[in-house]
Length: 100
Image (cartoon, rainbow, N blue to C red; front, side, top):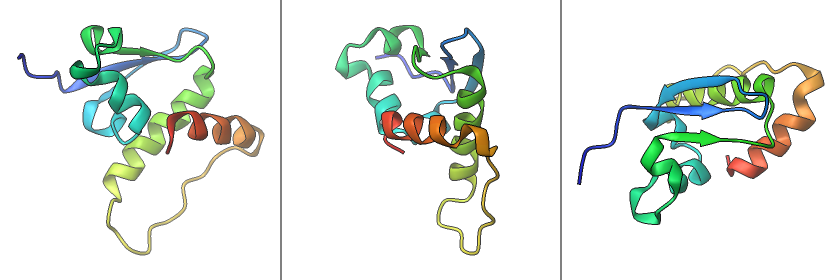
């Protein structure tokens, strides 16, 4: 079996593309399952995950959260991450969908 690439592409509903480290993206159990070759999803073959229900603005914040979470894993006294108030509902829905 070939080694997994270090980066994956996340595509929003409005076709914004984000190339992120696989380790960061796999913080989401949903993304991790999609990218697992044993599950047989197309995403595992193309290393691209398309989110038809997440806008580019929201997916950008999700990607920021992935990196923030990976960077601060196990840390204490971590500052809160800032999110625009107008995106809060959409971010909650995306978090629920991605299981993060």
